[in-house]
Length: 346
Image: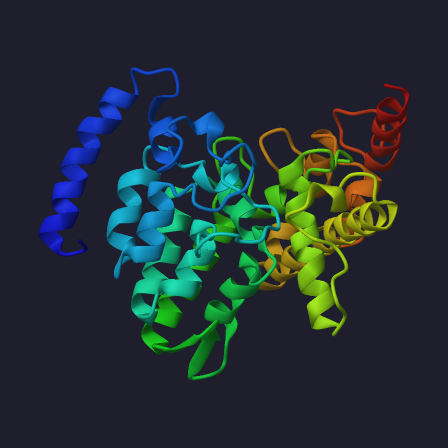
């Protein structure tokens, strides 16, 4: 339920469960991410042996998909695991069974009250770590795009109604103004390491894999390719549920590699887009440095982000970002080159 007494009951029961979970190997994190099919957080993405986020529904999925006012229940779980948005599935994926989407996407898909949507976004801002929220913005769903694209509809739209999927919301100007203030506060917020959202966005690096041998991975990308074929009016020539289509088919393999490469580059470009949006909202962040004195670009280099992984996209955002840091003898460009060299010889 989603009535006041139901939320209070949920809060009391959850507190007891989380305190007990803290004594287990997985801790509270394991309880938050435990799915209705698999009880271990490590197995969250496993379903019948395939790593698909389909029916593996966590409490965060349930709250964001089924609660009329998810803002009331989300804090109960996020306060125990504020890094949730960082660790849930953020890669492009296709839903094969039902409508189980990433919790952040669920807010835009299922909230049918504008005020509730705004409050839920504010809850994610308040209870998530800065790094986790940055990762959440780059959650990529093939059907809905990036979470960031949905967020700016709410934050920056000049229309009296906004469209999400099959429903529309009437904009409440008071709530919109309130959200704008919350976004501004988030952009200025620093974590314990002195880093801002801009630091983590700039340093974000989509995981690269050249291993397509996993059946689930192959089905994910080939499912996306099928949608691409359909959009272009072409017939998809492969049977997704026949392993013969995956094993030894050079044409499909090449298309899958190209699709993943393009999607990865698209995410790198999205990082640059979000960084520019942040700088436009809060120009003073161009001068922001963390506790180590690193600006966002220098921080991205310090955590190993390479030129080929999107460093080129953010290099020219702010004049002076690429200057050498006082504690480091090499400039960020030299460090990036060194990191690439070390990666190549390993």
